[in-house]
Image 1: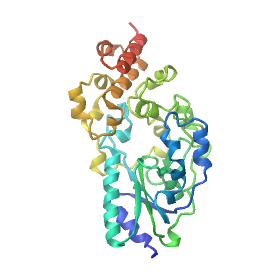
Image 2 (image 1 turned 60 degrees about the horizontal axis):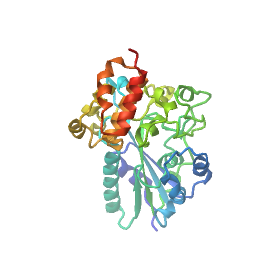
Image 3 (image 1 turned 60 degrees about the vertical axis):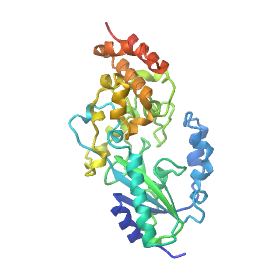
Image 4 (image 1 turned 180 degrees about the vertical axis):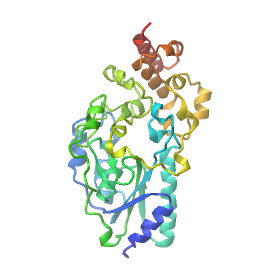
Length: 340
């Protein structure tokens, strides 16, 4: 097969809207980087992580004849005076990043096939058994820091990732020799700041304790021992990123798709009080849809209880008669924490 020009592929990726591009050989990954985490139970109930482990570890099972993994990243940081008070993780305030990055992958696929007829590819934006973060590190875009996030020299960890597997090689000198330099040193600010001790300090994240997992993936009641940590947190969690010294000089994105939508300006009280009609007007098209109507209100009730927000009493009392048992239980727990 003909070798592709790495410079041409990079140019096409940048034109498609990606800001960082790197290349890694499509070789099998060391099994322990995934299996140790799974065997320790850190995936919580995300059984799908184990069900396709073999494919996650070998891109050749996703694309026969795979030669190259193109790692891709976009900066999503938005500066806003109210942002620090938002109970939503920064990445979830604008258009759903899956849609945005998938659009860019499709654009890259189209121009790549025009430039190189016959090339085959497999792309993913956090929706297929392809470990984008691992490949981003192997392609030299950054390194996996103590908080489990990919930290890049250009944008810190305020990046969203995609990857594309190709059945062609690129210029040999374009392949990265490994991750970027680890700049964590002896810093443990993220580990110490995590309110639920979800970080192992080695780049591993225990989903069972992670507030992002609990507010997004967990469809059941959040464990009692974790609820008090949800003050100021309704969807996702940025604590370990916000305290990182490598994130203190962020570069604002110029891409309009990452700009906050109106729902991002709502506080926990307003999110708890959302009506179905308001939810349908504000949430579809954002990552918040992942939690669903009941999940989002459940999370907001937890956040109000964790904050002991006495001003939320009326909202919580109304939710105590909600048709969702999940929301009702969360509201009753929150009411029990309010100081009269």
